Image 1 (cartoon, rainbow, N blue to C red):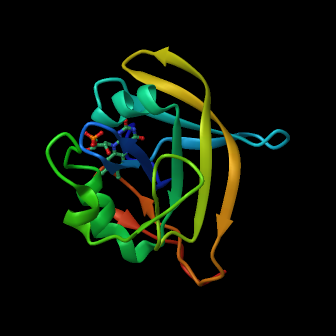
Image 2: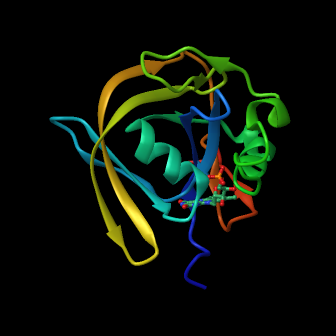
Length: 159
Ligand SMILES: Cc1cc2nc3c(=O)[nH]c(=O)nc-3n(C[C@H](O)[C@H](O)[C@H](O)COP(=O)(O)O)c2cc1C
């Protein structure tokens, strides 16, 4: 089935002014688009609450998480920030960033981004973001990969 392809999962954080908190959304559709300048793309459904927030704020953090955070990724990918505080619900710790959104303290790599441009394509929107700051933690990690919208795996150590 078309959605059954392995994808690395990231958690996007974006500031929610109405609730005065940062929301988290799980995203499997994303990619580096340009190296110089550094531009990263995410693909988000236009009906998601997070898309509303991104349109308002025009900035977001892309948080790369290790496999051990699969349960938190599932929660952030099935609950809506319209009704829940996903930091509270998942127990993830927020970390101040250089933009309006907090980032996630447990992430091994954080890209702080400003929205550069967006394109509505079908029922999703491709958002190209300029990476304005990168934060890398010197920790061991195993990439968090989804094989469907509810199943997760990681890479084996075997070569
Ligand atoms: C593993 C996984 C990957 C997902 N990938 C995407 C994605 O790439 N784009 C998207 O729009 N939604 C994706 N979703 C769905 C959203 O994360 C989900 O609808 C979320 O609850 C929306 O949150 P919000 O209402 O706070 O914006 C994914 C969900 C899961 C579980």
